[in-house]
Image (cartoon, rainbow, N blue to C red; front, side, top):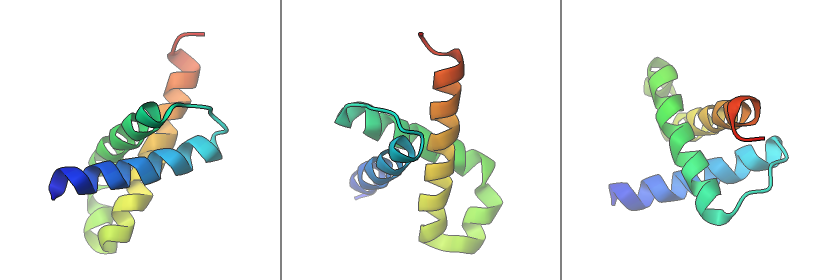
Amino acid sequence: MGVIWLLIVGAAAGFLATRIMDVKASVPTTIAIGMGGALIGGLVLRMALAFMGMLGGLVGAVLGALLLIWLWQQYGPK
């Protein structure tokens, strides 16, 4: 169940982040961005997630995905 939940949260976070940052990406890329964002958000916002619960997980994942997209736009292939 953990892997399925990670895919669902990753897809949701990636979808929100790509729409906020106005990035056109395929579904697998969007899920990967969301999952990467979830990892980054989990590391950066670990304390906040403990207080906010599952909704905090989505918020942290979206914030992490936004950071990942920004880094990709700044330092990725042009």
